[in-house]
Length: 189
Image 1 (cartoon, rainbow, N blue to C red):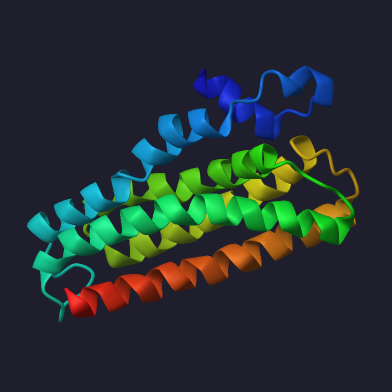
Image 2 (image 1 turned 180 degrees about the vertical axis):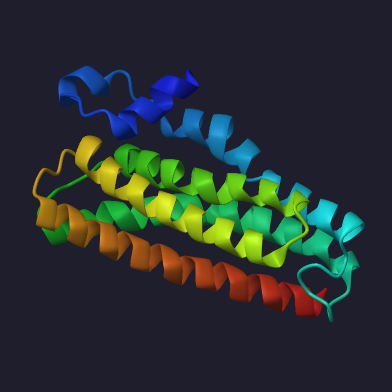
């Protein structure tokens, strides 16, 4: 699957008939992008634990970062398909019926900045990393908005905005669940 073609689906509007055969399958996106890109976060947490043990969490032992990274990886693998299912069902709110494949593509695209931003952990500055996570969140919101327009074909600006906000609110809630589950895992490990 061509990486440039992968991103053109989001940012270049095309007719549904032109993109129907060109859209990657859920399996292709999951194994070619989500699975490897979500490994960046646990790898970078391991890097932080080894090189900057006091950078993010002064009072928590860094030996648990390896286990937390593994738990986050599993949670990310689960959360992307669940968010796609939620987006598919939220479509009824604006009178559209997106397929799971289209919803999965949008969520998968939107998750990429969150996965890649962990690379900035090599910079041992909490403020920079926090700012970069904010930028990744904004990029994810933009990708969802553009994906709703170009993949789902929703042209009404108000409906797109409403569906984007509902999706982002659900994703924020899901992110909160992932963080709480990770902290619970951290406590039990």
